[in-house]
Length: 237
Image (cartoon, rainbow, N blue to C red; front, side, top):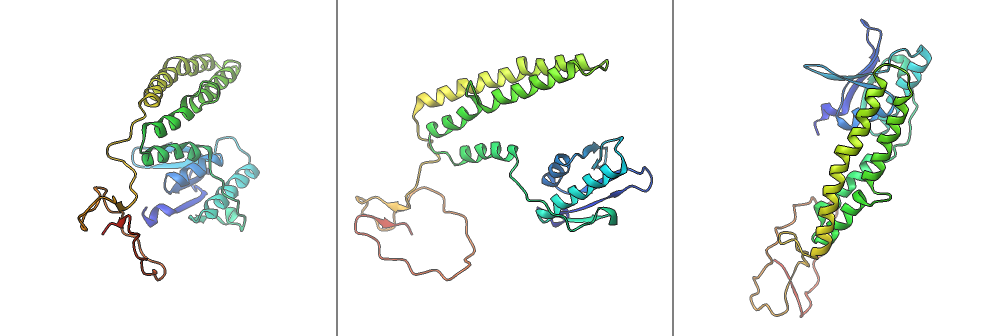
């Protein structure tokens, strides 16, 4: 990540009077949005603004909070004096990051059973992620249906359509894939677990497994010399 992506400006625009935040990376944008800011996508730039029709006190409160949250995770924020305080907020892992951890588990999986278990978290019929997402969209549809403006019933129907005809297809397809993997009990041919040892029946001292070497790591402290290998298994070279 470029150093410039860790820097933002947050202040009141002298022309429009809006409180705007500019620059930053996707994590910074997520923090801004969770603090109430609205993304604005233009042809040559994307920035964030506070919602319209807020009074000055609420604008100041949200701007101070955004600066506090960004600085708490080590972003450099140049802020207007009115928003530049010593306030900091603890940073908690958002729900989306917890769900994204499922992708890390799939990246590290070596068997079909492991991936099946991850997909179960998405597709479980009572409390899976996709079922919960459908409930959120359905609740939003119900909220829109009674909101009172002319486009709201159309928005409610659109949300319900997404639940029934788009999200439902994703859930169905992933459920079939999950069930297929659950029945396979198959090791992934390119991801077999490696014990970093040569088998006890291997005669060639130079024999190594086919696994790629791990990426180099910078030593932060002196490394103790390796112990003598056990007779039953020789470590790789």
